[in-house]
Image 1 (cartoon, rainbow, N blue to C red):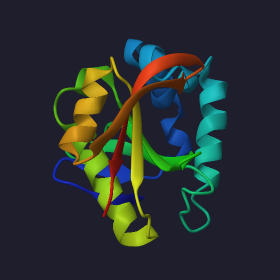
Image 2 (image 1 turned 180 degrees about the vertical axis):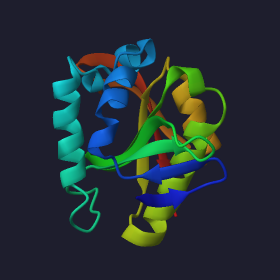
Image 3 (image 1 turned 90 degrees about the horizontal axis):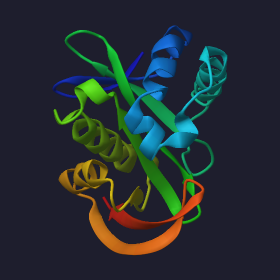
Length: 173
């Protein structure tokens, strides 16, 4: 089911038909480097994650309480190429996103991040959305900057199980 559409993308609910593709994307180098907690050990593990994400769609979206993650699909081909979502963090709601390696540097992440953040402000009364990325992940922080997130600070913090220098961005309505 389509939740949001942009010029090039459909942001939609995940389905069980996505398990194989989600597992394959989780094995890519970019995922292993930047989002290791989303690297799945096998298709069964990916299926459990998709089941969980699907279970979150049944109630009204409340990313302050539970993750709200959508699949990113190319409008032209209907190919699943990544995900974008909102989830709770200690300081509010954080945006997360990943695009399959072969589809990076085409503006799709920026398009998805802009669409879901604009939708969230219009529909969920969020005061702000944070974007937290490792400082060396230039591609990811460029997505945030192009999506009109503003750099708030750069500091050492716990990030994916390690102390890392991170950039913290914020977008407000």
